[in-house]
Every structure is written in structure tokens, then in C-alpha cells.
Image (tube, rainbow, N blue to C red; front, side, top):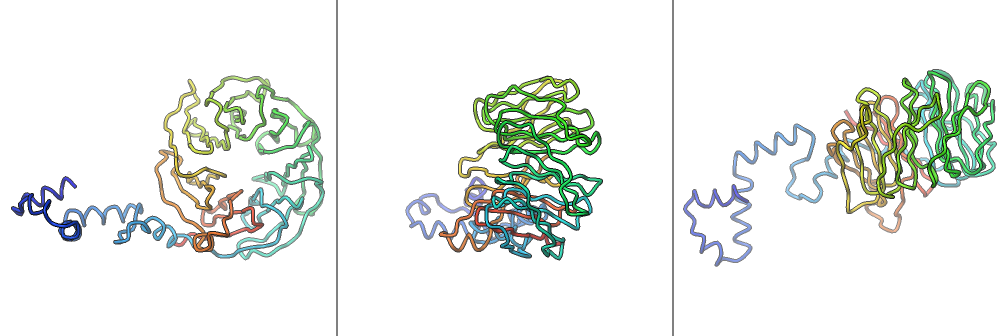
Length: 371
């Protein structure tokens, strides 16, 4: 607007004429400046090169049109009889697994996406999956208080991990030391030896269920977040709490460790935090959203955070500086408001070219990123 008034002053247009005229004439004059000013056009071309927005006259559809041209739906799968709670990839990137409320785990070939097998064994809802980056081993957590280890190559159950007093929400696997971390409804985080399936430590300190779990596996640090709004850093060797960060009671929904930068990314229902943890714990940057409630999070290998909100829209941020990259939504959801589905799980493949999402309508949607 400042440049617009400067344009009016340079062309010797009387301000009284602008005020006395109708709104339509003012809009025509502004649009004349909007599309004819060379400096403005150059600036918009630079923004287009930076992949931030697409220059269209309909400003409401700019971000959606641009992102939808980058992502397209490859396949929509309907195979489970319950909500899709977790999606995980094999280390070869040729297989992925899906877990649901129907107490089954399905194994799919990738990227041709064909059902290979179905694993059964849990007697309650399956909440999370974890896989090895070196071997064909997969772990599943359930509300039946147990964790199971599966030999994917032979399609059989190999080990049971029993010790939680209530349902297990999250699991993370450490390939370097063959350790498994689990957190659940009994307000504890437990560390397991995967070779013997025995419990090593029980980390207690939260007074509400654990909903966020991550690890710095080289230094053997464990990060836990809970519904009580507290993040704790644990020494997995000694089983002791080192540091604590309080968020004032807001539920922690997601934790991800960035080992190179000594940082962790934390997600709540309305905010994303970038936290420095080396010498002292402090929040480097915070992003809040007043319009949406964040439901699920995931991070790609190249540092892109994908966040799904309560409407079904997926937002993207850069994890290194928390810069906003854009968003997209399923065209079926955007056209039909009655079919509002909430995304429960998100997962990038190892090549960062595909994004898989699972919702409460029992669907798995495979998105492909165009070159």
C-alpha cells in the first residue's frame, strides 16, 4: 500500500478524487498498479523461483494450487477395518507395513503397492510400529500391554516384550546397541534388550501417559514427552533423568531428535518448538497456529516436517529453521465436506519422494512428489 500511494503521488493524481470516487474505481486504479508495476512483477517472479507461492490472480487458491501441482495421489487403499494408527518402511524401501485398530499388521510391496501378507497376534488395537535399519525385523506395540518382534523375512513372531502395566503407545528401536524404547499409558518409559527380550530400565517421573518419544542413539539419550506438558531427557545407561523442560500443561504429541544440531523438535496440538539441548535446554524458535489443531507429525530424511491438522490438510515446515513450505489437502475431502477424515498417521519413504497417510476412514493414501 505504501508503494501504491507513492505511485499515485508520482502520477499527480489528486487524493480528493480517490476519496470521492466509488470503491470500484479505487480497485481499478490499484489493480492497474498491481499488474503494471515492473518492480512488483520481478519480486513475484523471485518468490516463484523460491517455491513459496504461485502467482495467480485468485489469491485464495495460490498455496493450494502450487502444492497440489507438486503432489499427486498415486493410490488409495482400503484394506483395514479400523483406523490406520501407524505406517513404517523396511530399510530396503521396497516394503512398508501398516497397523490398524483391527489388530492386524499388513505387509505391502512398494512402490507397486500390492498386499503381500497379514500378521495377527495382538488382542487389542495396534498403536505403533518400529523397524530396523539393518535387518528384516519389525516391532509392534499394542493396547494389550505387550510389544511383539516379528521376523519379516519368514513371516513369523520371534519375541514377546511383557512388562508394561497398561497399553503401550510408542516404540523406538536403536540399531546400534540393539535396544528398544517404549512408552505408554502407565506413565513410564521402559528400555528393553532386544536379544533377550528383558527389561533393562524403567524410567518413571511423568504423572500422565507418555505421548512423545525420541532418542539420541549415539549418546544413548532418551527424550520423553507426556500429557502433563513436560519433556524429560534421560541417560539410558544409568536410567536417570538429566534435564526437564515444562510447557505449562500442554500435551506433547511429537518428539524428534536432530543429533547433528543437538536439537529436538517438539509438537503440541497448536505449536511446534525447536529446542536446543546441549549445554542448557532452551527454546530456539516457536510456531503457533490459531486456526488448526495438529493431529500427527512426521519428519523426512532431508529435514521436512509434515503435520496433519483436524481438517485433513497437510502442512510442511523446514525442521532446521521452521520456515513454512506450504500445504495440500485431499481433493475428495475439499469437495465433499461431509466426508471429513482426520489423518492419524503420516510417513515419508526413505527416498522422500512418497508420502503415505492413514486416516480414521480406514484409508491409506499414497502421495507422490513430482519432479
